Image 1 (tube, each protein chain N blue to C red):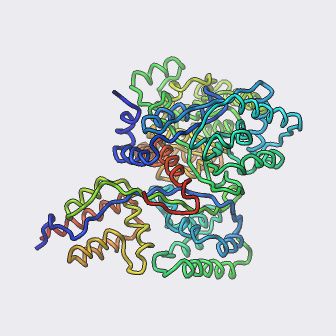
Image 2: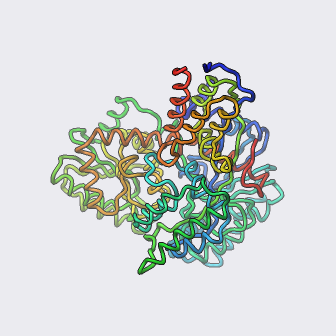
Image 3: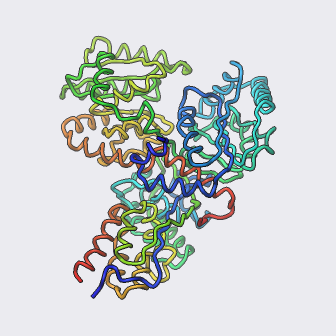
Amino acid sequence: MLDSDQRAGSPFQFRECFVMTMPTGRTASNLRELVHTLREVNEAVLSYHLWQSRMSIAHPGVEYPNDFAIWATQALQDSRLAEKLSVIDPFVYEDMKQLRDALVDLLDEYLWDQPYVPWARPGFEFYFCEASIVVLRSQIFAWTLSEFCAGLSKVGLDSVYYHFVDARWRLRSIRMNDFSNWIKINYDLPDLAAAIQGIDVGFYTLEEVRGTILDLVNQIYKGA
Amino acid sequence: MTTRLNELEPISGPTVIDQLRRMAERLAGQRLVHINSTRMGGGVAELLMGIIPLWNELGIDARWEVIQGDQAFFEVTKAMHNALQGFDVRITPAMFQHYLEVNRMNASRLEFDADFVVVNDPQPAFLIQHMRSHARRWIWRCHIDASRPNRQVWRFLRDAVSQYDASIFSMPNFSQNLPHPQYVIHPSIDPLSEKNRELSEEEISAVMDRLGIERDKPIILQVSRFDSFKDPLGVIQAFRMVRSQTPCKLVLAGGEATDDPEGSRIFAEAQEAAHGDPDIQLLLLPPESNHEINALQRAADVIVQKSVREGFGLTVTEAMWKGKPVIGGAAGGIVLQLRDYYTGFLVHSPEGCALRIRYLLHHPDMGHRMGQIAREFVRSHFLMTRNVRDYLSMMLLSDNPGSRSMEI
């Protein structure tokens, strides 16, 4: 039986994360320019537009999960392309090269079938950015699951982002996020770790992610 | 003792204030100088007035220096400002020379040794040529929509800006091709200022009485200068389409754009369009009317900012902070702030504006819900605490320019 105060072998230290958007000075006015530039830009540009930008401006009610899909619908007014781009899950790729190839391939194929090159509305050009990140070690440690819940309730959403979204890239080889990984290592709760990993980051706000994780953990020791 | 940080804590949240304190600990005692060209009036002065006390409460040794110039200098810098916004402006070599001379004179007058200098906008940009050794890091902060700058002026300014260690723009699309790191820091509002602080119903009513605005019908409000980019005539057109079906009144409040040759013409046209209509009120407010604007925004039922061209659009942010549903033109930073049916509505025409006003007047509950989401969105992204945090991040990162990530 699980005790919510059962002590972990190693504590979970919450970190906070601040994403500073850095424009690269490069832009795309149409889809062909977007593809062309995507082949050349730093890998940091891809991570920014695929998941980090969410921490820069987190809109309520996210319709599409990455900047490329949002640009397709807002600037090109091409919902079909936006839908195709929205299925790109960056965290299933082994490295940035694979991810870049997949993205470019998708856009190339789409462009191939178009009778004309889709152009952005004036003023809605794509501005390629990358990010610099400051990670701040908080003073909040969790030695038990109840301390984990208390900590998770207290930290800022930047911390939820860092451990739950950003971690998916850092821990992509084991398909984990920091929370699931800590639970898996310290407690014999593979189902809980998997359930947390299974929360679809594309369709929840970070506040909803926090609430869902808390519910999942609470259910475990309420059930016990 | 009440400090600004203490006052901000219930608004921004204790976690945010704690983060600022912990980040600032890493920079304790660092000397930071902000330089701009005016201590009163304008968005930059407003921002600095709010932010300087915060720096000092956080243990950063912050100073605010203001450059001095004659009328001819400010005429050149006004022309440069307009040119950076894309206006076709001609600046003669003699004007550039005078601008450089005033920068040189200020450089010999100013005295500081700093770790970081933040130079705001083009007016003091050339100080770096004379004062490079007075600070470890020079940062140029551009508050202007420089997405399509006049080439002649940008080429001139670029000579100085390229010497900086970093630059900051308000939006990615305002950034330029520069040989140093560029950061985006969105503008912010001060929730404690007279323009944004909470007001009692009595205070709101007193202002409405003084301005002669009866609250007998739903109020549609646009607060902005009377210039063509803010499209006051389009707002009147939209209002008339709405009023033909739903009773309401329109208040257009703002100053006249005296530095815009079109300004007086647009105001006269708005007056003419509103003439004889008891449901339209045009208010020319003096520049220091922050309390009045606050009350107007809080009394309004729907707030419109139907710009056809916009920098960031802090009037939208202010309205959102007051929990109001906002309808904004799809331009500049307004696009970043408003999402249909969540934080407001984006529109592209007077007809679209009318459609959304009608929707909100008939669905006040939806308007209220959107207003609450908008307020929380501003709380997370556009309060001055976030602005301070971004500066702290940038200062920390500047010591690791090659790295995209640092852990402290």
